[in-house]
Length: 85
Image 1 (tube, rainbow, N blue to C red):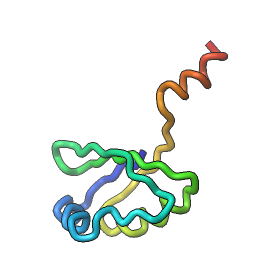
Image 2: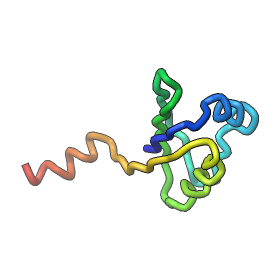
Image 3: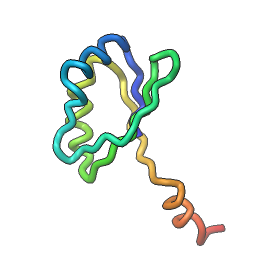
Image 4: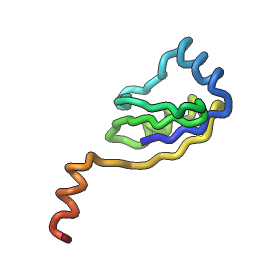
């Protein structure tokens, strides 16, 4: 999960319109959710190699600040934690 803190949402959407997501090979966009204020975007991405995510972030670094939060689906988390309950 990428938490994006937009510096200027208009510039973000202009770049997206002109260049799409600019995803490097090996990085898959799953879905995203934008806060009503247009200041935050929660973007779910998938990759096997973290360096492709870093490559993608470098293309957008001038337009925001980014947090990377590794996540798993709830069902997977439940399987991991079940033996400890």
